[in-house]
Amino acid sequence: MSLRVQSPVAGTTIPLTDVPDPVFAQAMVGPGVAVRPDGGQADAVSPIDGTVATLHPHAFVVAADDGRAVLVHLGIDTVQRKGEGFTLHVVKGEAVRAGQPVIGWNPDAVQAAGYSPVVPVVALDAAAEALTGIPGERTVAAGDPLFTWDG
Image 1 (spheres, rainbow, N blue to C red):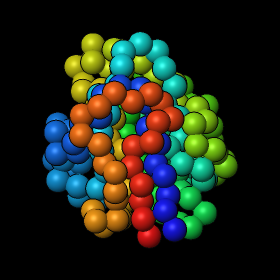
Image 2: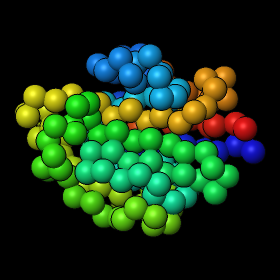
Image 3: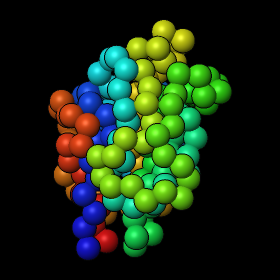
Image 4: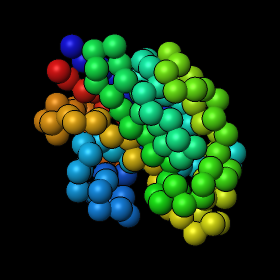
């Protein structure tokens, strides 16, 4: 069964290998793609239908009913901001639909604070060959398809 993973933010897709963090760039937590977000206040939305399995001000994981889970990380090293500039719209354990707002944030504020605003979108514990349709560099809107997770 295929799982369509949507972009949580608007911006430009970049390869995970271009993320300025070795954990993501080397796909240590799983394969995926990253999005260089457009600036300004925005909501990061759920990339799939599922349940919010993990929720931090700067990152979240949504798990599908079949157990596959997608990590969205809003910026690099943004845990250092201790929640400043992030607004949670959901709670851990809440059922969400793809495209539903999860966290409000401002990528420009993240960058102004000295952090990369790049957003890795990772298929947790997936095999790289299970992901298809991973884009090269292209413009996406929040909710646009990013890749398909077969399995």
